[in-house]
Length: 78
Image (cartoon, rainbow, N blue to C red):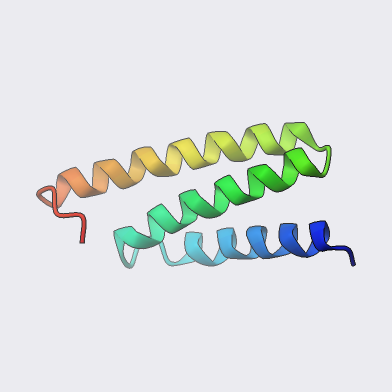
């Protein structure tokens, strides 16, 4: 495996793990957004631009969900 494949595997594995724990704490939601952004970078570097675009959208949706959760909890980011 080359470094790009290892990077992509790590990014997608992080996405799945953080998504699984999203309901436990809002920090997992922001971590999921970050992992989606990393997976998007992988998609573009690998030449799979449709994957990169979809992951950017997932990252934006996760950021929006994180902001909604923060607002619902009274604005505390911790």
